[in-house]
Length: 195
Image (cartoon, rainbow, N blue to C red; front, side):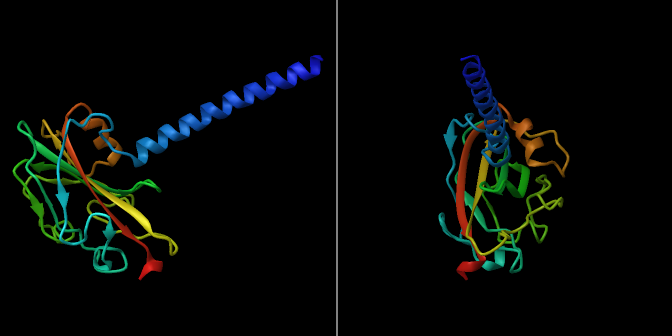
């Protein structure tokens, strides 16, 4: 009887430990691959691209298999009180950050295709570090032949961030906390096996 009781206690302790570990993994994953302003958005922005349709395939010229150009982007007017815009592009399933861009002037409404890769971003905008440890845009480059999902998120902030260029997505997430007025997103897919 005593052995059975201790077995149940050990099993219960193991279950509690597993739940704690899974909770920590989930929290890390959510912070790494999720929305940097999770739960703080009050309005929405409309974001679109002539480079690819929302939910469509990202063309090869925007990837590591092509010229690696950053996409053309356009968006709606942000809400009153917007002081700057922030953009993050990542592969949420794998937590890989492809583009971090902040302090985009509030009056900006578009980027031309290749703006990051050709150094044609608006004056004042700062690019952060992607997960290749370089500043600027790094196009989709999925391993293997499976198709990956890429999300571009645009945020309207009530402030200009006091950050130099070269910050990471994690550092940006801490800086935007409580400052997001609106958010929009654009999703694209790319896989080498679908060419």
